Length: 244
Image (tube, rainbow, N blue to C red):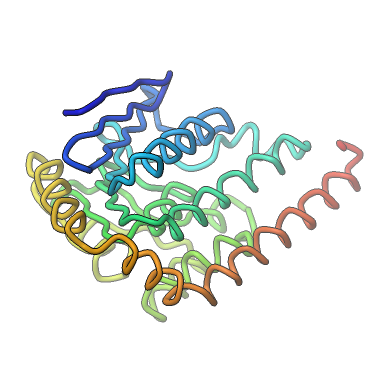
């Protein structure tokens, strides 16, 4: 391994042109602005290293989604968090090198949107881990940006079930729906992720980047507009509540 770096909740490990970014807050990997900042800093380093990325979580948890106390406080910090989360998804979807996501456990709400932002996504077979967008089930309207992230990978039928009905999937069901590309045994997850990343590292970097931009141009433009719309609407709602 060429280098290892650690932040408070994110570890960066580089070897053979592959950057492994591990999120581990010791709990549910709930996304806060500082944690998103750490992931972004790790992606900065991976981009500087021209590395293929493997993004993974802690045992049993990929990410439980946004930190709900912050998000539901309806303050400017809530809006900042929402925008930062989807800007991270946009960055992953447009990252210049391939991104492999090794989902170590539950991927809920914003955690599932990050999962959907990888180029190749691997889960754990037979684990019963929950994968899905639960916003409607907990009384939250789905953000515009979330709808676009879900739309770009899920089958039409599963998109409706995941978005409108808040259906949660097992890893096997998540493959059928489009959240995951494949599942493997738990002890094979890091092995398989590295195997896929090694193959993707052999792709021509420029050709991959240009083709990704062309293939996702319309979706990335729509997602960026949705992020801006969510931000405007959320901040307007916060102002109406007098929390601005």
